[in-house]
Length: 495
Image (tube, rainbow, N blue to C red; front, side):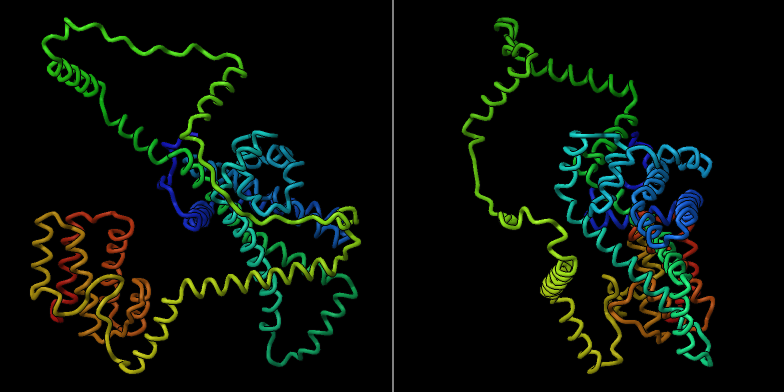
């Protein structure tokens, strides 16, 4: 792959940020993903449900089993769109037979693998098989396996929530005059006549239709992040760009300058000294046994003779249970143990999260008590910006112009935004809290102020501030002059 064509910022990210990048990829290239995804899932559902219409439970099981095959289509589209070559629906349709039949056995066998979305790019994009694929997966999973498994668990919960929500919304949409007993009678009749199971299958397909592309994209982004960390894509990309910026004449001039500097540093009696003899170079090693001997001799050095003890938990197998058949243990006890373990793990995670975030929720309780004592106290700081009136200059537009003349565009824009927030709170009476974000400030302004011109001007200022503060895209001088004029007309009297 040519990383110079990648359309996202190449840098190491945290696993959670990488998964969020995958969700953003689906939102960005949904137009290229929608048609292939609908064709794939609709075609699978039509074939399976049509051929097994007399066995709905078997059809539902087969739809669940083939979910890894559906993931191949979003991965195919996003992996090409990420490098600036988003395929059309005809190209996806032509590649669909190969995507669904290639490596079919491994895909179905690893259906219950919790990290299948993370492993799929290794098999589909890198094309590795056998021992090479297993070794590659072990290397990639060392710092991302727990997050990939957590991603699978999260989307299982979201899928269940979507399924239950779609069923729960049906009684909510009924008119008030409809008797709930009638609805129960209809459901009982549907279960007896057999059409209710098809409704449930349709709801399940709807949940897959919405969530599965996001799941495949999040696993793919997590895989890309691990490759960025291991292969230093960000450094390689910067070096390539630096190489492109250096012209051949510049490289030649730099080389000649370096040679002249080296020649000037040589001592006068260099000719009388003996010629430098490089150290002997080891002969080429052709045999695998010779390589092993060299490796063993290097590892025998005392520098490498460092050991440490590591304690890990391992499952202890009892000989009496080893030869018992699986189903003799009881499905009920197995499910009960699984649910109990899940509950205990959830309780432990909840306690840990409470302890880790204790400062946050304790501060919220303290904030609520302070807000009850002083309900009308305006905030002094919003998202890191000091908005106290005494912290602002008397002639704010003139101060902003002075910053612009010094080339400090970001500081000038921050001053305008601080002044606008201070004017809204102290002059216009807009009620904001210290925990509000830029977007929440816009929404509260829309509900509390009827001046459409003020809302539009503050929205434009907020949009430019977001671009500068978070995307590091500084506005042009023309745009800043327009903002200054608009600011003076909107907030000049209050300032």
